Length: 322
Ligand code: GTP
Image 1 (cartoon, rainbow, N blue to C red):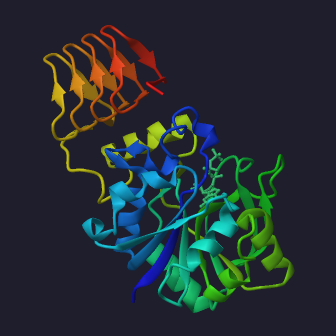
Image 2: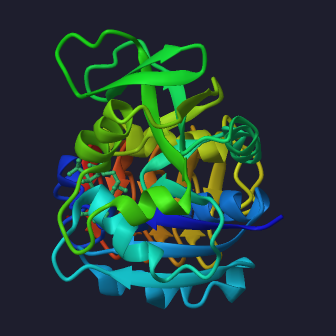
Image 3: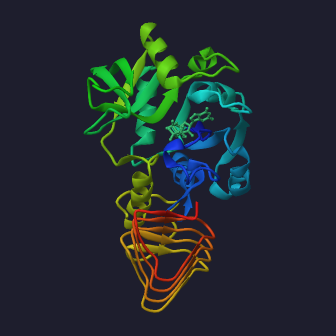
């Protein structure tokens, strides 16, 4: 069985400013590749044969890397919103590019997870659901959509609130039946979290929750973005898109590392980067073509592609070159 999917990548990524002013969040390098490459490869592994990237902000930056998807073993198409349509409007707009008529998998383009996607699809089909949400538990649900369940049926959806009634949250991956997508108004700004889900519940539609406690991370904040990259390089979460490497760091082809430099804690050195001598690079992401002067110490930091960092720089949790 093969499936179709939509990957939502049109947001402004405001929590990651200034990193996301010129590179959309889904295209930021995480463990040596644009973040959504990890999601696209996982989707393919779960049986997705066709994926539409729902783009808006900096839409033109996706296709040069992903092309028609053939290099990734999947068909990739592009839906462009001239005016951002919100998550629901984006799903409706992108759905016209899908060739299949079966259930559609929807991914937020900022979630790194190890959840059983094939299991979620099977669950959706077995329950004869209209929509199935992947859910996970977090210690503090205030920044997310908290979901109330009876058994595995969703009975309430509470988007971002001060006192969430549960710590079970919307983990940002859904299976939608096509007729539910077709009910979303066309060409209008619609939020799937604030409008579509609450409306489906008021109408007593079959909305189910697929709870999966595997690795989950919303990469939308600076700390999380760096953690995602570290966790992929360290193998805390597996991704076939992470380039092959040995030990606890990743050096992309063409990068040069000077004598006496120590790289560790899940750091990534991008393609063609030049690292001087006697540097310490811990838990950091150095962009492609960046030049790091000798004696620099960077911990949990993110350096833009092509950025020049002067010799002797000391940086902890900083973002350079944005
Ligand atoms: P913040 O501004 O930091 O909240 O980031 P964001 O808006 O980019 O992400 P958010 O978590 O709010 O959205 C979830 C996913 O939906 C992300 O992958 C976004 O790229 C995507 N998204 C949000 N709004 C739109 C939209 O209007 N159109 C499209 N195509 N995608 C969207």
